[in-house]
Length: 92
Image (cartoon, rainbow, N blue to C red):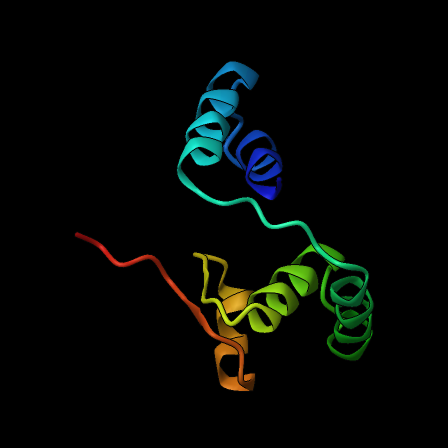
């Protein structure tokens, strides 16, 4: 999961703390597994827009499944203008 990578590299979280967050995510959310079609679409999007493979895959999977991609990633939020359903988390 990308969150583990971001928390360890960008925020320097300890592995134990990252695992706690991932455990909560696993219990709370449905984890989506990409299909081969998702992967092919993501490769095409990645090459077209010079996206990382994981960013392209998240965009493609959310679009193919009719879901909204929720992120703080500014680069991904720009794809809202390109017919992808992307938004930041709402504050409650």
